[in-house]
Length: 398
Ligand code: 9MR
Image (cartoon, rainbow, N blue to C red; front, side, top):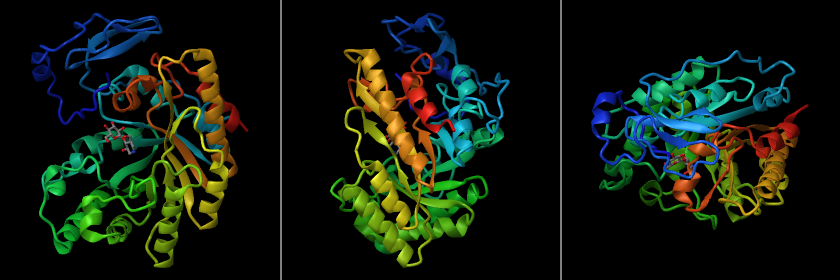
């Protein structure tokens, strides 16, 4: 199973000492087509895809993979999700991070760095509060810098993620004794310090993440409890002051179609705009379920754009029950659903782009959170393109 631990240092030798709970011994098989055995490697090792049929536990390299290419220019008339998107004035991106399974895995890195597939990178975890300010007032940007600079080095635009969220908060924030003055100062300092640190490197910031409940009421986060909805304005103003060039987004899930939550998010955008608060876009995460794709995504996108917001589909994946009873049929349906979502962005002028929340089923967050579900992404566990890939590609292809 994918571990979400972020490498804060390269303590590989120390990590090898802790192999007591190892399931697959180092160098033994851990995957590949038809493999039904154990898939977990010892700490300090990772399950490396050697070919379609064989993966084995290999010591994790201490540096990101660097064997790539040759790549195709995304502006040329060649195949690739970003290449097609670019020719429509849009972007296609992926989430990824400074972890063994992503940038240190050559199978992953080879695809992720390909500019014809991805033009945008969102650090999945390393810019979040628990990673950047685990101790009050002590900022650590080591892993966040590593992944951000890695993305920039390979020509990606970076979607910054995220400045204020109710999850992945250190205990000192959630368990602190705050009043409006003290929490406002803490929030302002966090946003200002992080956005200043990355100034000039980020093209979009997900400033505020998941502010609403599904019924459209504000989520009762520590920030909302102490500051009310003013925390949103505080964060946006601090981000704009720190990095005036970045486009500022409010980002949420279950807001793809027209519903109470997407209406609340849109109304928040309108209110912020009317009050002169700096905000540019609505991030539609797009964590969708196969068979339950809203029928009115384009209608929703149109009303968002009409309110003066740009849109980005920030975390797309379409999950299903695994293994599906009929994989061919399930994958074809998923491909059609990816095409529907992609088309909504294609036909919406100010939909800036689409980012998938990692691109391979091997590294998806879904199975660890939704037991029995998965296969949500355009590449399978063996880094092979699925019908979903072609559903996106054929929709974007000019
Ligand atoms: O992909 C992220 C996963 O590795 C983390 O464990 C998880 C913790 O909550 O956050 C995941 O990313 C989330 C994103 O930041 C915001 N929208 C929902 C995503 C999936 O949980």
